[in-house]
Image (cartoon, rainbow, N blue to C red):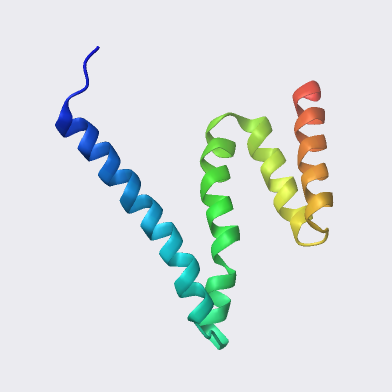
Length: 99
């Protein structure tokens, strides 16, 4: 296996750009003063990313996972994070054994 110089430079450049954008986010976030709607929007980013990662898997793997995801979503409105995770895991296990 040989490594082309162009490929190596492309990989290094992509790694550098990725690193710079992540570090820049940390420096910029410290200087931002957010209030009102902007703060609410930034506070909504982590759950939105989590749903974007989990929802396709939960909704394409089968009915058991889709039902468990719905149960977990309802529990998330009432329980803290650890309780919600426990409800999600237990509901998947029980539904897989029942259905």
